[in-house]
Amino acid sequence: MAPSSAIREAEEYGEVVLSKVVKAGRRTYFLDVRSTRGGDYFLTVTESRKITDRDGNVTYDRHKIFLYKEDFEKFTQGLHEVVEFIRQAKPEFFAAEVPAE
Image 1 (cartoon, rainbow, N blue to C red):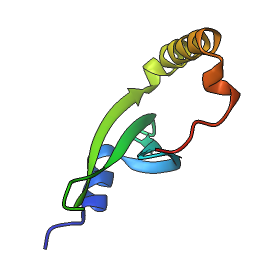
Image 2 (cartoon, rainbow, N blue to C red):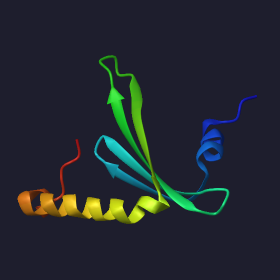
Image 3 (cartoon, one colour):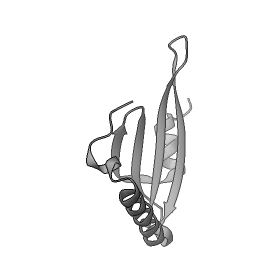
Image 4 (cartoon, helix red, strand yellow):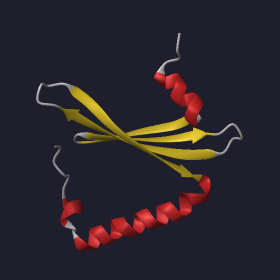
């Protein structure tokens, strides 16, 4: 019998140390802190988007990125810079909660 996809994913990507789910309309983001065999941490960010076809069948489109310890600081700085740019250019995006799609 083949292992479940959750078990395969844990073996393939490392043990989950912390998981945070962010629901945002039709999209859900999974932020998972994972541990390597050597005890280092890395982050996987998974975007899962619900897609319903004309017949009502539901599928999920998933995209995953990996962020490693040597990139945490640069990534955080870059993300902060672009969010601050958007905050200055489009403050209305932050004034109220964006309605769910």
